[in-house]
Length: 150
Image (cartoon, rainbow, N blue to C red):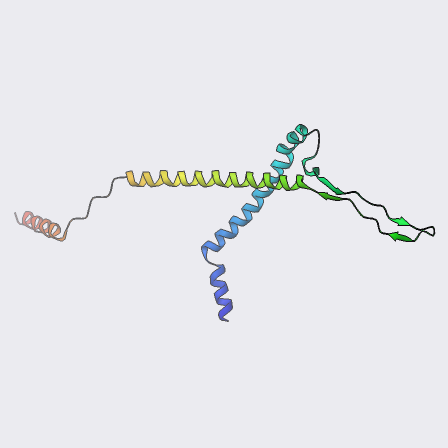
């Protein structure tokens, strides 16, 4: 029973819920950035590379070998697919990461700037007048009592 209570306390803390919301929004943001890169940024880059799809960029390490058959049609050696080093997909993921990192950096900068503006506004606001001391309160009461007796 102690484990379940401890887990419940952990899961219902405000910062854990905030983190979960951040992860969900981050996942959606990643999808948006991926679509931006795939559909807007990479087509012009592909045109610059000679009408190639950026994800298709690869280096062939080994050619494909067809299966060898004997006279009866039995397989002597299995077919082997070609072996590719697909660097295009890796580069595209690096571009996705760079855009996400830049976006998060800009977002943090904006949030920090807004927080600094808020702090400056709070600091510029006039401080409330200090409360009168006990002696001042007592003297004011005596003065008011003396006024009432006149």
